[in-house]
Structure formats: C-alpha cells, structure tokens
Length: 218
Ligand code: ADP
Image (cartoon, rainbow, N blue to C red; front, side):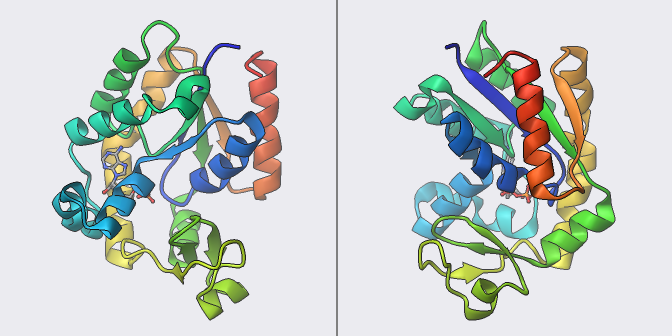
C-alpha cells in the first residue's frame, strides 16, 4: 500500500484533534500534531520548549523554518512510513510548499477541511479541557474536567493556557490570515474536501472514512 498522508485543515475548535485520534486508530498511521509536539517541548523545558513557550502562550505562530524541521524529523520515524495524519501543519503556504518538497512524488493524499462557524469554534475552545498525558479532549462539564483526572490514563486534565479569550481571538485571526489561503492551495490540486464540522463527531468521522474510501485511498 502506498503512503497515506492526510492533511486535516480547519480553524481552532473545528474538531481536528478529535477526528485525528479516531482516524489514527482506524488507518494505523500516526497523529502528528505540531501543537502537541511544541507543547511537549515546553513541558519538558527543552531548549526548543524555552524558545517557543511565549509564542504558544500568546497564540502566535512559531516560525515556518522551525516547524518544517520538526515535521521533517517526525517523518523519519518508523511509524510514519505508512503515512500520517497532519493536524496543525501545514498552517501557512510556506509550510505547505515545504511539505510538498518533503513528501516528493507521492505528495499529500487528501486534505479534509472541517468547516465550523466562528461562534461554535469559540464556544468549543472555551469549554475545552485536555489531558496533558494522552491528549484526550473533554468538555468543562465532564466529570474528568471537574475532578481534574483523566479516566483514560489517570493524567491531569487541564485548560490549555492558550484557550483564554485573548489567545483564542488571536489564533482565529491568524487562521484567517495565514491558514485559510491553504484551502485554495489544495483545491487547485484537486485534493480538498470540505465537510461540515459542526455535526456530531461520529457523523463527521463516518463522512471522512467515506471520502477516503471513495478516493480509493484505503
Ligand atoms: P490550535 O490549532 O487550537 O491553535 P495547536 O495545538 O494546533 O492548536 O497549536 C498550538 C500552538 O502551537 C499554535 O497557536 C502555535 O503557536 C503553535 N503551532 C502549532 N502548529 C504550528 C505550525 N504549523 N506553525 C506555526 N506554529 C504552530
């Protein structure tokens, strides 16, 4: 089977992380989230983490060069030989071009755009809580969020430091400016499928699987 590289696009709160966790299990390809990689570096206090901590906190973007190198390095790991689900990358036209160069001839298999209105994105992000260990996403009303303990792995369930109203607004604005142009980039290559991300997560997953099957990618 050839490599399956799925780019999951959509603004913050569109459901990319939730869908990637499911699709990763279904297609046995790793969920590569540049946000998770960067946050892990911040938590570990590594030189990379110290370099990017304040950018993440404010909701700004890390440099293309830095994330391009992170993703290139991630693709050298054995589990990425079969492909990957890319979440939060590419986020700029420069990153999309770097990804094309990295993947070479086969390129990106498909780009799924999860479309949600801004109000829903803000509501989802404001009520989002996340396990720092296994990254399971909860709502603020879930028992795990209230107790602060993940029922999946026992890790701490917290609110991300960039899920504050100011950082959410900054991230959504950057999405419109830097990331939304990628929709035309992938549409021009015949690789873009836009789905309504406001629906129930199970329905969205079923839709994505149907698109992948219809394109003969699974
Ligand atoms: P969200 O999409 O909700 O903002 P992510 O977890 O994808 O969350 O990213 C968190 C933060 O990590 C971003 O706000 C940004 O600072 C940084 N980041 C993640 N991916 C990239 C990227 N591809 N390019 C630049 N910065 C990135």
